[in-house]
Structure formats: structure tokens, C-alpha cells
Image (cartoon, rainbow, N blue to C red; front, side, top):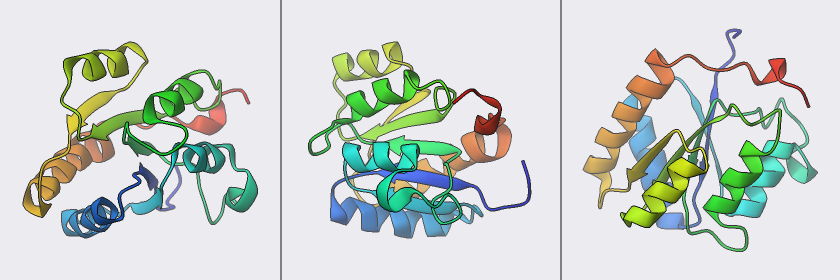
Length: 152
């Protein structure tokens, strides 16, 4: 990878949660850019580079996707399926970060190809801890696939 700042895409429809994520992410100290979209449809548009997301300089492909399950219109599972069926994006690292602790949701996410499944904590301090752990593993130690090397 070059020396540009890597992007994390947060797909979250709750404005309060987005605000918490932004503050918590800022406290982690990781030098990544956090982009947010509020629906599954927006996530697909962002990842496709269509509509207002067509400028890849302004909206670069993320190196990590934090994906909620419960989203308006197109849900998180549908977004995950779309990603895994898209040859260029299939290797994208996807972490389901959701309020659901239901076993069937956990199992479904992993069957569909999620890289990790994390239940959102209540409140900011727990979120900082989780994002720090996610950052340490997925942003520092884990190798990032070069999505440009995959077929379109």
C-alpha cells in the first residue's frame, strides 16, 4: 500500500451511535479516515463508486468495513452478501458491529463470510476499548488485501 491514509467505512443508521463511534474512534489514535453511511443502499453505492461516491479521491475504497445488521431498506446481511458476490470486493474485511447478540445472527454472519462479529457495547468507554482492539488487530497486525489486484 502507498502512504495515503487508509479508510474505514462505518455503516450505521443511528445518528447517536455514529456520534459515539466518531468520538471513540478519535480517541484510539489510529491514523485512519472514518467515513460513514447510514443505510445498506448507501454502503453499496459507496463501495460501487456510484452517484455521489464516484470520486475515489474523495471516497476511497475502505480497507475495513464496520457493518451493522439492522439498517433501513437494504440490511447488513444483504450488504455482506453483495460484497462477497462482488469479485473485486469479496476480499474486503468486514466486521459485523451490531446490537444483536442472537446466536442465529452470529452464525449467519460467519456463514456469509463476515471476518468478525462484535456486539456493540452500551456507552462510549466500552466502544473505545472495542475500537482499540479492532484497530490493533485489523489495522496494525492484519495484512490488508489490495483490492486493485482483484478482477472487476
